[in-house]
Amino acid sequence: MSAFETVDISTLRVGAALSSPINDEAGMKLLGEGVEITENLLRRLRDRGISRVAIGQADLSMLQELNSTATDAADATDFREASARGARRQLVALTMLGRRSRKNVDPVSLLNESALMCADSLYADRYAIALLSSEDTLRLRVGTRAVTGRVPETECRDLPAGSNDSLAAYTIEQDEPITVAELATDERFCDEFLEDLGVVSALSAPIFYGADTIGAVSIYSSTPREFTEEESLFVEAMGGLVAVSAKQAIKAHAPQPPTETHDADQGTAENRRHQRFEYDLEQRVAPVLNGQLPSLSAFRSVRVLDISVGGISFLWRARPEQDEWIVALGQGGS
Image 1: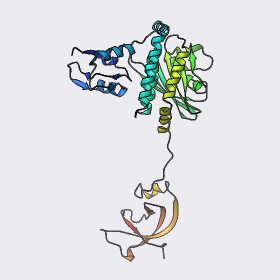
Image 2: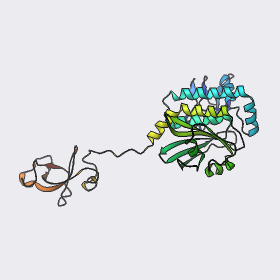
Image 3: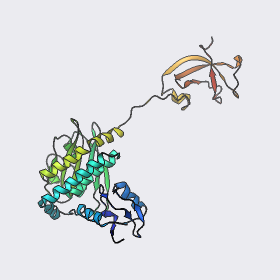
Image 4: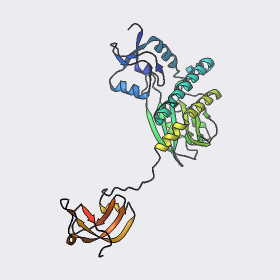
């Protein structure tokens, strides 16, 4: 165990790939080498009651570099002054997200990870993804970074698109990222929802799919902050990497048109007549008892309600207990 260090699982950053195995505090292997940290993996560890794990010292150094994020405006200022280090962090995030986007990852999970990486890289308190769920509605999902002393939270809200009632709606109408130094005094839009969350400053970039704007990726700060042009370009680039996933997520949650069913046994005749083409003609039918073909005297005239590939539905209220029938060829009375 000398080559391993025990850390809290909050140290494990989403998107990081570890070269060493992940062990429990007793030294028992939990996961093998080359494990990529995902939100689902961290959730599984918490569900198993595991709060601390042992990882290799090299991986610990790498995670400490990723985790050296600021939690207040002073640290954020220090970060911007260390431009070389900031550029490296952003490059790491872009590389990680690019690799993730090439894998078979759930589109919604990838979108959330991209926004979280933006917040981690730029020391923001919250992050958000907004997608056009319809022509006039935006679905906004806001998350909180998991830092010491703070429990991660997620909130969802449907917002009207094409209006100035929210930063997200304003962003998708623009061709470039939007920076907000002070949310409460910004006259371009009014976002009471973000104000209620305690957001003071924000950076939001539209997500383009071809020539269409389909959503936005945003980060929020609870303290006054002026985001730089380089930071805006970084968030815009992160949004570009997940544009395909955003389109897939919108398509997956879009209402599907009703499809015609051909199951002759689905529902009663009264229910099914409203789901298929209606007919109004007479047929001669007879019940099939114990697999025996009926005699001619057993046939009765009934009114046909609808016809499909699967069979014919009809109504004969005099004998509702019969559920197996054979339909005679020709019209009723012939």
